[in-house]
Image 1 (cartoon, helix red, strand yellow):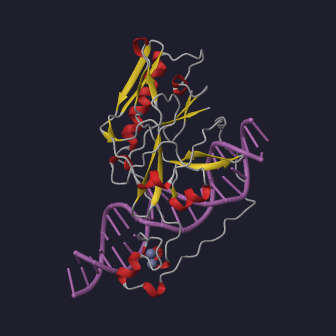
Image 2: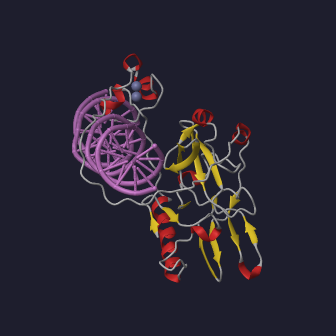
Image 3: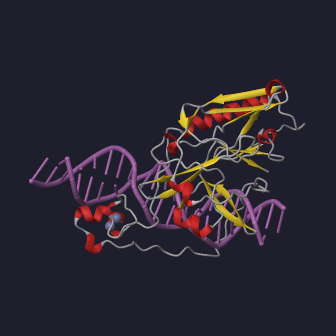
Length: 263
DNA sequence: GTAGTCGGACGGTCAAAAAG
DNA sequence: TTTTTGACCGTCCGACTACG
Ligand SMILES: [Zn+2]
Ligand SMILES: [Zn+2]
């Protein structure tokens, strides 16, 4: 069982609901493991809800750089316009990164993440007509007799793409309107299998901001970045499954829940 | 109130290292 | 080859000072 530093739960096995549960040596989900996951979730919630990441521009203008002040992508940038420095507002120089520099040994790595899901294209229509849906943040899972759940505070989140979804397929996206960045939030659906009845329920939207990478022609999410809408069109299939973009002024923007990745 | 200064926390990049 | 790591180095938060 392993958790990575970005509050992502790494599970083994396939994408059945049980798979995102961490396994102990005997491949069973012991109470202690459940307790550990519960703690992890609680911790990640505590650590991430209040704190949003500072967003930097790729290149500050020379004036903002000199003053150590926030810049933006405009040229002239807003700060220079405000201060009447439009004439000198240009990108600051950045030096080339040097190659051939030896490094010390790295710490032992975790295993590759295989069989990452490939997500269908999010269309502009989905983009244009976001659905806002307040869903109780309940993380729940049934595995044979054991069930555990963790209640999140009220938050906007998205339903699972499919009501029978058993895989980590729920997601949403939203725009940071200040810079028109599109963020993706991925979660997963789950099935409550209590009392021999299968009840599907909307996703708790266990989310994380995921970037994408292309492997063998498949574009799949990796962690912690963002894309603009232009990037989405460029990347083609680099879009989340699910149809419910959430705009930036909803609470979810600042939240960062654990995300499951199947090994 | 505003603007200027700046130490250093924070974050994004990307080649090296490691794994497949 | 793909994936992960982490050093590098840039951004800019926030605390401060100066000025009117
Ligand atoms: Zn600027
Ligand atoms: Zn500028």
